[in-house]
Image 1: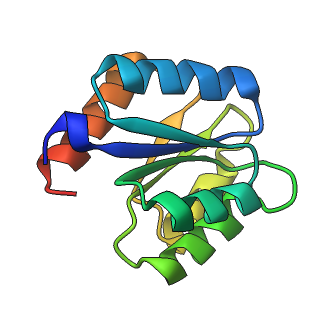
Image 2: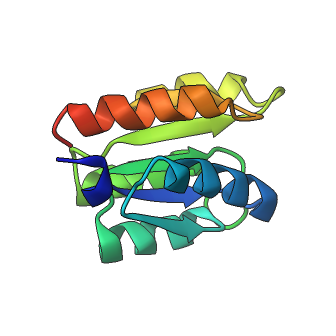
Length: 126
């Protein structure tokens, strides 16, 4: 798969965080970036678009990131989900990894780390 065929879902209740991450991913040449503001929306967007990679915030309204990871993995056991955590929510990362998260990303995002994750998943054949 090439980067211009790659689809990503960005789920975060912060519109600013979503925009920054979306802009970074689009600058790499990804085909599409979908957005969700909470875990429920993330599950619906995953079902509708079947992205190759998901960036998921942990602490969100309605359904948190850990609940959303669990439900997405029931839909697609091969889903690649990267959890995003800010300082103070790192204790949730262990639960996220146990739930099946593929990797994690520290907030605020380092664009180079985002690019590395996207490239690794894309090169892995998605």
